[in-house]
Length: 230
Image (cartoon, one colour):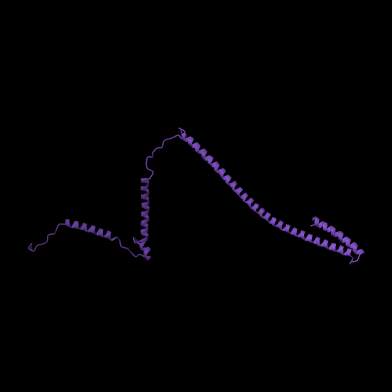
């Protein structure tokens, strides 16, 4: 407002009018026409100055609102530009990653293409780099089954299983086969025992047969008759 030329002119005129009113009031009365004219001029200039100030303030308020609106628009634009810049940076990073992947794929393709060309060149060569050092000989016999080893293992395993089976049966079915087994089973004292009846029977049969043989070799004795000598 201070920079406005209209306000500056009105303030200058108001100062001159106030000075004139002060000079007139010191020499003239309050009802003098000159005093009244000076007073009316001062009041008019003050009203004009107030109106001009109010108008300038209204313009400044409008300009402020317009500036604030522009500021909001600019802030939104800056935010949009920031978002766009971030998106561009992300896209640039993605482009960098994709570029590296393309470079790696390109190198792999070049390596495969070079290997393919080398393979084609090697396939077109008449002589290879493979040399037979010694011919392979057929085996003299089958590697499996080994019949002697299987038979030996079968006999050994059969013996072991037989011994285990017999020992298992013996442990399950404990029979009394001697004096020691009877003592262990009964837990008492043995007063006496009988010999093997089969051996005794065989001895008796042998003696009987021997006696029968001797009885057949003896001569019969003649019995005395009733009509013999007296």
